[in-house]
Length: 242
Image (tube, rainbow, N blue to C red):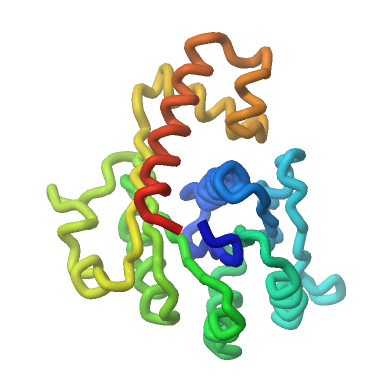
C-alpha cells in the first residue's frame, strides 16, 4: 500500500455518517499502512478530533472576528498535507462543504497534490431514507467539480440505499461516472438491537475497534459483533486496493 495518500471525506448533507467514515479510514490506514495523519476541519461537529487515540489536528477555518469561513486557512491545511508522506485523512463538515469544494476547484488543489506525487481520493456517502436525494445530489456536485477517483459509501443505518427498487449501481449517476468511481463500500445496519446498539455505543464513546476490545462497556458477544463489522469494512477497503 502506498503511504503518500490524501483522502478527503466530502458530502454537503449533515448527519449522514461522514465522521464515522473518517474514523473507519483512520483505523484502517493505521492498521494497514502503519501511520496516518487525521485532520478535522468541521467547525460545528469536531467529531474526529474527539477520538483521543487519533490525535487528529483541528483545523479552525472560522474567522474569529467575523465567524465566517476563512478560505485562506485551507492554505495551511495544504502545507500540512505536503509536509508528510503518511496517509492523510481529512474530515470535512457539511457547513464547510461548499467553501472547501470551491477552494479545491479554484486553486486546482487536487491537481497540485497529484503533481507532487500524492495519490488523492475523495470519499462521499449516500444514505437511505429521507436523506437519499440530498446525499445523491451532494455526490453529483462533487463528481462534477473535481477529477480525483471517488469511493462511495452506502450507509444503510437510515434505511436501504435505493429508490423505487433501484440501487445506486442502477442509477444514471453511477453509469455516467463509473470510470471515476474507484469503489463502493456498503455499511450494513444489521440487527438494530445488537449490531446497531454496538455501533451506536462505539460512536457515542468515540472508541476505536481496538479500544472497544478492551473496554468494560462491551461484553464478549458485542466484541465479536464489532470484529465482524470491522472485518466486513476492511475487506471491502482491501478490495479497492489503495
